[in-house]
Amino acid sequence: MKDSLCGSVLTEGDKLPRIFVRREKGFTERVQRLADVLRKDAKRKHPRLALLLDMSHPRRCPKCGKVMRHKFYSYAYHIEVDECTACKATWFDKDELETLQCLIEGSEDKA
Image (cartoon, rainbow, N blue to C red; front, side, top):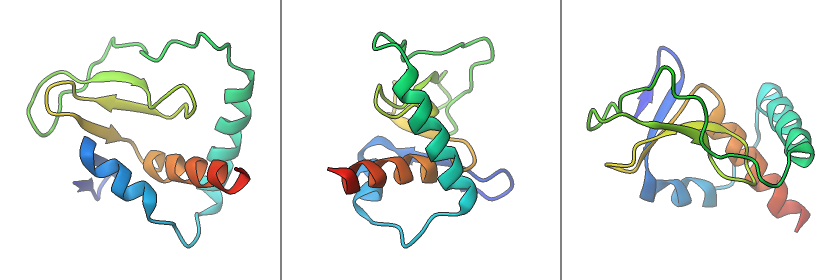
C-alpha cells in the first residue's frame, strides 16, 4: 500500500523478498546519496548497535491498528522502519524502501 501524498509505503512482511529480487533499472540521485551516506555510517557503527529505536511517538499499523515497533531494518542495513509485530507489516517512509533496495543491490554487486 503506497501513500501518494507523503510517499510512504506499507508492505506485508512476506512481500519484501519479492520486491528485493526485482532489480531496479536505476535509482534517483537522492536515493543513491542516501544509500551512500548510510553505507558509510554503517561502517562506523559499533557491532552492538541496538536495532530498536526511540518509541516516544509510536505509529499505529494502518493495517491492523496495533502499535508498531520503530527499529533499524537490520544490522546490515540501517534504514529506520516501523514494524508491526502483530501482522508483520513494515512501514517505510519516503525513499526508505528504494534506499534499502539500492543498498541491497550495491552489496550484491560487490559480492
